[in-house]
Length: 223
Image (cartoon, rainbow, N blue to C red; front, side, top):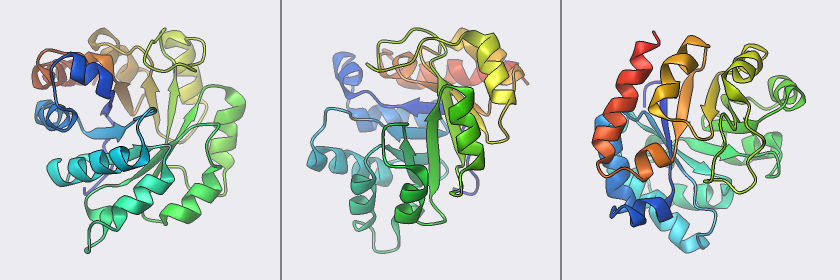
C-alpha cells in the first residue's frame, strides 16, 4: 500500500455475506476488483480464533494496495502480525476503534507508529478530541449518516448536511458510515468526505464486484 485510500471503504458483515451465499474472503476480494480501496474486518460476535483466521486469510488474499484494518480487536491485530515473518504491516495496515474501546493513545502505542489508526466519532466534542489527540489519528469515521441495522449501538442519523458540517470542523480525513448507498456517494464526495464506508451495499449484494463498481462510479461523479 503506497498511500491510504479511503474512498470506497468496505466494512465486513459475515452474517449478511453468508445469507447472500458468499464466503467473506471471496466477497472482499471481489469487491476489491470492483473498486473497494479499504476493508475493515468487523466481527462483533466472532471468537478470537475465528476473527484471527479471517484477518490472516484476508491479509493473504487482498491486493497490497487495499488497506486492511481490524475493528476494535487490537489483540487480534497484534496476533496476526506474528503470522508474517516479513512484518504484518506489509499485508495489513492497522486498527479502527470506537469511543468505548481502548483510548487512541494506548492503541497507537500498541500498534506502532507506522500502522493506520481510525476512530469513530459522532459529535463535535469527539471530533475535537480526535483532532487534538497526542496520538496520530489517520482518519475519523463519522456516522451514522442514515438509520442502519448493521450496528446495534449506532448513534442517531446525521443526514448529509450535518455530516458535511462535522467533516468540515476537523482537519483529519473523514469517512461517512451508516446506511450509505450508491445514491449518497456523489453528495458525500462533494461535501469533502475522504471516503464512504458501506456494509449492506456490498455484503448483501448478489454480485459484490458489480456492486462495488456501481459505488466506485457514483463516487467518481462527485469529483
